[in-house]
Amino acid sequence: MTPAAETPLLHARNIGFRYGRRESDYRFDDWTASFPRGAVTALTGPSGCGKSTRLYLLALMLRISSGSIELDGERVDDLPDGARAALRANRFGFIFQDAALDTSRTVLDNVVETALYRGERKRDLHTRARELLDELGVAVPADRKPGEVSGGQAQRIATCRALIGRPDVIVADEPTGNLDPASAQVLLGALRRHTDQGAGVIIVTHDPGVAAWADHRIELSAS
Ligand SMILES: Nc1ncnc2c1ncn2[C@@H]1O[C@H](COP(=O)(O)OP(=O)(O)OP(=O)(O)O)[C@@H](O)[C@H]1O
Image 1 (cartoon, rainbow, N blue to C red):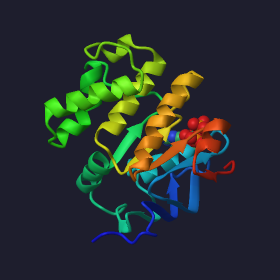
Image 2: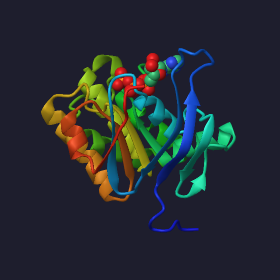
Image 3: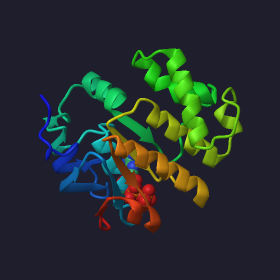
Image 4: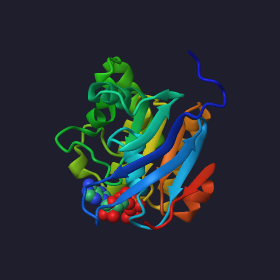
């Protein structure tokens, strides 16, 4: 069934979460937020207020303890682990703060790996990976290992990896944190082209310029 036009791409409904049982462990209750298609939403707020935690919950990497998460109007938080993993692989792209590349594989392999698992053709993926690396200005040989690239290049390689499967949702944790202003603009431009094609992007950022550039902002307060 096609979701109604007004159905958000991703919706967190009254969600709660806690890292542990101790009084000092970070927790929150009753958080509601909507993330539309075709738009960039920035999650902002002071360090430690729970931005990354919410990103991981929205991307089904952690389990909420109350409430629900809906993707295109369908509840997804309560699915078994395997189904959640399949959704993560097929519907989400990830850009982590530390790029999180596999240092034992080449740049090209890092970019195509997740999409290969989905059964896409290797030759097509390699062509698209090279186009994306070019678009993101990653001027290193594609057979180089991630240990041999700069932090900023690693971040842009991770962005290519997130984009290659054309996921419905990209979650990005400080994607421009390691980048000079010109490279940050290139990365944001690539994300913008992705939302122009109907996807949703959720960015955690401390950068007021990136927050202002986003279509929507959700500001969290200190916990
Ligand atoms: N794996 C974990 N186990 C226990 N506590 C955690 C874990 N990860 C984060 N926390 C705690 O949860 C709180 C929220 O962390 P989170 O990383 O979500 O904040 P943030 O707003 O993204 O911070 P920053 O802007 O500094 O990256 C912090 O108090 C942090 O110490």
